[in-house]
Image 1 (cartoon, helix red, strand yellow):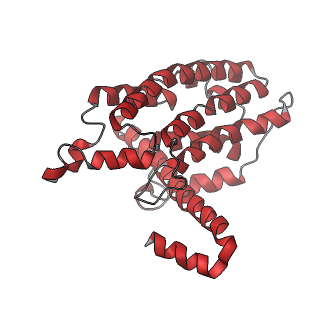
Image 2 (cartoon, rainbow, N blue to C red):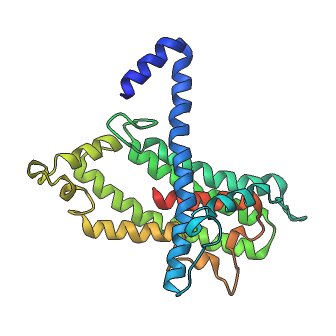
Image 3 (cartoon, helix red, strand yellow):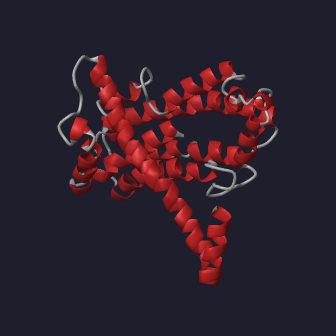
Length: 266
């Protein structure tokens, strides 16, 4: 289906089709991702409400299902306030440098046999490298805010992110050793040819099950990387409140959360 769509588009647009095709693939990945991120926040708030014996968000739409849309509209139209003493250029560069790697990392994730934005041979290496760039956005955001609370939050966040990247990297190296490839598509295909594939139980050959101890290491590292409980020391409510994001508002604030939740899904 994808091949026929590509050939039909190439016959219609000729030399311009590769550019249009690349844009379509990027949009097809980013738009559903942003939708998933929006409703992941709703699910998290519902789960927290359930654990605290309260209903959670339930005012906008049936069962609160339109709450993410209301939040998006609010953040889009909310004024972005820049502190007087902040470095203007770097202040706005911080959120951009945080969200861009989070979205770019999805370029090498295969959604099907030929359904990846970029099917590169060093996909796993690209994934590790691009996600490690987000720490620069956090540091810039904390420093450019010219606030000691934001700066302390940035120091905490960057130290935690860099520390747990090491264990996450070692976990991914084990996957590389087992599959013998850095190509994300080939890694998925190796899982399909596992021990239980001939029995029709392909899911038992997925890497997380035979490498379960490594999966636990990766999972804990992922929680720390995305500042989830119990590793949310970046947002110490009694100390530095929102960490490096304390001086941000509107869409600049939303960019940090979009990047955080996009990494959680990844």
